[in-house]
Image (cartoon, rainbow over all chains, first blue to last red; front, side, top):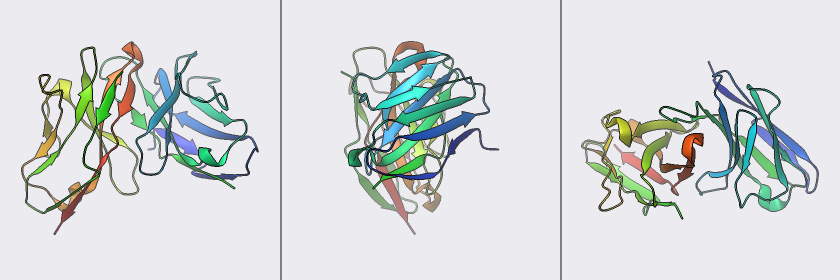
Length: 113
Length: 110
């Protein structure tokens, strides 16, 4: 009954080799978010989509991009991963109104070698 | 700028003892605060939100605007409460963006 699905759960990539992480949802929520969580740190918002409107956080590196081809799917692209990009990447969704509760996926752990 | 502070990285108590997980915030607008919890090997999930003033799994949290705090409390801790707890502040209008505190690991010993 997973409502927010992330694939793959574990991703290993090489330094500088582009990588794409995937998120899908069955909740039909308007908003999708991407967070980066490094070891022992809080999740940090990278960007979000409200429907098709993309909103980048001011301190998100240019190396990170996102695509949302339809309501259900959202992708995180890292163009040239560095060692410092190794982290857990969390996808979340919300209705964008009402309670604003966010529903999280299980995360993708990215390792950069 | 908005900020959420959880001063304790680890809180260790015995089963049956009271628990208080501290959270302080800094925000110029009207705050909307949440507690999220992550049990071992599970995804992050909402525990409670201040607006609904509810009690979930015996936990409560009261927003104190004077002290800019939103501490999470439970009178009698259970072993199954052991988890990572994050306090979060909503900002950014209707997008529901969250800023999280650093998290507190609650360890309830038998």
